[in-house]
Length: 116
Image (tube, rainbow, N blue to C red; front, side, top):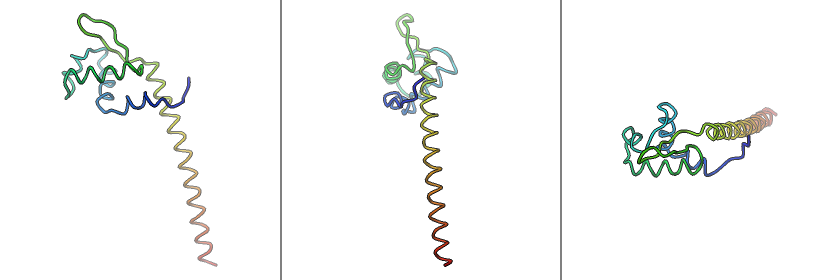
């Protein structure tokens, strides 16, 4: 599984409404634009646009269901997003540890010079 950062994927996840939609689909199972719009403070048209973005990056997939499409979360793609987030988090943790060590060294050196 690749952990290279996918900017399109993170741009899609970056929107709070889309994250809520993913949560709703995960907790409530597959849904349509109409069923999701009843649970969100946005119009059905806005929900459809958000669903299109999520579908384009592969986080959800839709199948025909009468006059609408029934969407569900693509768990493999969601797992890929989680792996990316974990990798980015680990990278930043390592950077912050290095910054802390540098700051501590500077602080020790400053105290050593003051005490001379």
